[in-house]
Image (cartoon, rainbow, N blue to C red):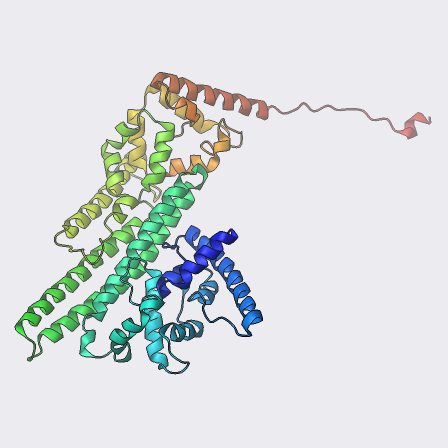
Length: 467
C-alpha cells in the first residue's frame, strides 16, 4: 500500500466500530479478501508502531489510540473466521469502553468481545458496539444485558444469534459464488473452481446447523414465555408470532441443508464452467443444446440453482411467503431426474452395465444430436489427437489438457476451441476453422511420430590400424 493510503485507512479504522475495524474495510472473506486484509494488517501495524515510537520520543509515553483488534487480525492471518476472544481483544475492549484494567468482570468482557467478533464476521449484522464517540451512551444503556445474560429481557437472544448465523451463511455463499465465477473464467482452473465452490457449500452447512439449533431454542423460549400466567395478552400474541417465525425458519433450514448436500455432490453440474466449455466449442449450438431436456435439467439442478435457494436476509425472510418449500422440492426433484436421465442414457449405451462415472451422459447425447455430421467427424478426429502436441490457442488455455478434461467431465464432446476472432463467423466458417485446427494438430502429431532411422556403422580402432 502507498503511504497516503495507509494513513487514510489508519485514520478511518481508528474511529471505526470494533467489528468494522477488525474487518479492516474488507467486507468479504474469500481467499482474495483474506490476502488483502492480511496485507492491510501488516501495513497498519508498521504504521501504528512508527506512530507509537514517535509519540514516545516526543512525550515519553506510548500513544494508547490504536486500531481495535489489529494484533488479533494478524494472529488470524487476516481470516475473520479464525478470530478468537483473546486477552489482547479484551484489554482493548476495556480501553474502548473507557474502563480501567480489571474494572469489568472477565465474563462480561468475554460477552462484549464475542459480539465484536460477530460484527467482524458479518458486516450486514446490526452493529451492537459503536465507535468511540457513541460508546459511553451505548454502554450506559446496554451494559445490563452483558452483566445479566440470564435476565428476562434476554428472551429472543437466540433468535438474534440465529439471524446473525444466517447473515454469515449468506455472506459465505455470495463470496463463494463470486470467487468460483472468477476462477471459472480461466479454462485451466475450472476443475479447481468447481471443487472450491462445492467445498464452500459443504462448509456452509455448519452455519445452517448452528442457525437451526438457535431457532429451535428461540422457539422454545418464546413458547415458555408465552405460557407464563402474568404475561399480557398483547405480549402473548407477539410471543406466539415470534415462536411461529422461529419454528418456520428452523424447518426451512432443514430442507436447505439437503440442498447444500446435493450441491456438493460430484455429479452436480457447475454451470459457470459447463456453459463456458460448451459455448467455446459450440457457440452456435449452445442455446439449442441447453434447451434440450438434458440441458434444462442441468440448469435446474446445478450448483448455482441450489445456492440461489439460500435464505434471504433474515429480517425479511418469511419461508411461507417465498414459497421456499416448493422451490426446494422442485430442485430436489430436478436433481433426481438429472441423475436418472444420465443413468438411463449410459445404461442404453453400455448394454445395461452402468458404472459410477455417468455424469454428463445425457448432455453429451444432446450435443451429438444437435451437432451436424461434419461436426461429429471433427469431434471424432479431435478426440484421437495426441494431447501432448501443442494445439492452436493453447497459450490461452482453451485447448489445454486441463480445459479438455474438464469439458469432457461435464459431457461436452471433444472439439477444438477456435480463437476469439473466429467466434463472430458464420456456422459454416467456424466449422471450417475447427476442421483446419484439427488438421494442423494431426499433421504435428504425424511429424512427431516419425522415428529417425537407425544406422549401423563399423568402427575401426587404433589397434586395427597399427597392423
